[in-house]
Image (cartoon, rainbow, N blue to C red; front, top):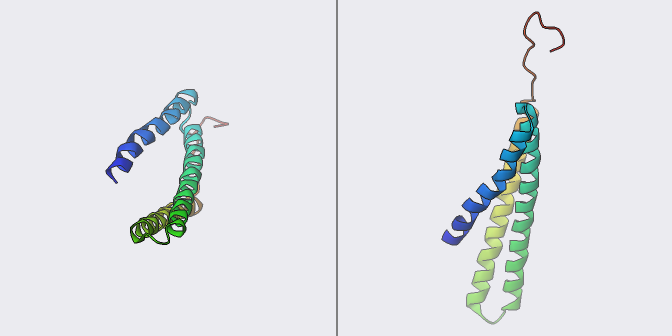
Length: 117
């Protein structure tokens, strides 16, 4: 588990670097938020796919090691963590989309006396 955390933090920072570059290219905050939302959608899809791969890998270990109880329990643990990761990511994705639906993006009111803003 410590190895996962040791890899996840630098990988998260490395993946956040394109967001900083996009912020430099877009002058308005709204454009940056749209680019960040697209980036998060891609990362969420990758993490969900990775959870599915973990589950299938654990299933393969579970089936392939029918005689060795130690390997079967290891495969079962990998399957359980893959399912947990999958459900957590789908739940987070659903909550975020629910919040986006409940609180739609609003434009700030235009200052008085300046037409067209």
